[in-house]
Length: 146
Image 1 (cartoon, rainbow, N blue to C red):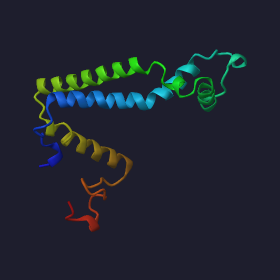
Image 2 (tube, rainbow, N blue to C red; image 1 turned 45 degrees about the vertical axis):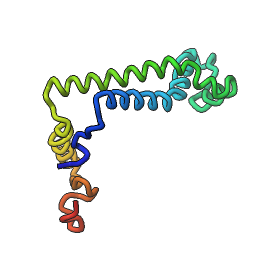
Image 3 (cartoon, helix red, strand yellow; image 1 turned 180 degrees about the vertical axis):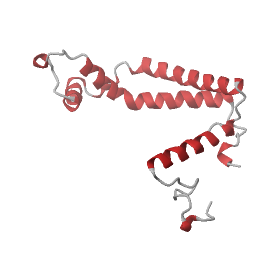
Image 4 (tube, rainbow, N blue to C red; image 1 turned 180 degrees about the horizontal axis):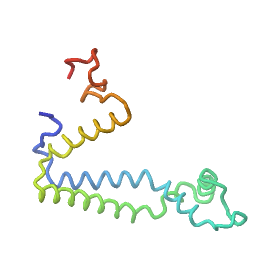
């Protein structure tokens, strides 16, 4: 049995919710400066003659020149609160659905993923990789290696 799929006793529901929140907060921290540039460019007039920026890099340089690093993190607090709550809700819903459908943890990615990989590999004409080895299935050098 796959050791990673076995439920660890220290992995409680509250730990999972906290982990989901932290993961979502990390994603928000990493993507927020890009969102600032994105929203700045979206607010530009549609007429090219009246635009302030010529592209993403120009927008990033202009934003930094105008406000420094603070310009890229303005409004971050509400976004972090929203993402922490969103991560907690997402994990809670996934856990509730899993419990409601009586799906054991170690079943979530077993057969379906293997079948999907086999179908994708055969459609592309590529050999399927042996689990845990990274080598194509049937590779003589990897026979018996696990």
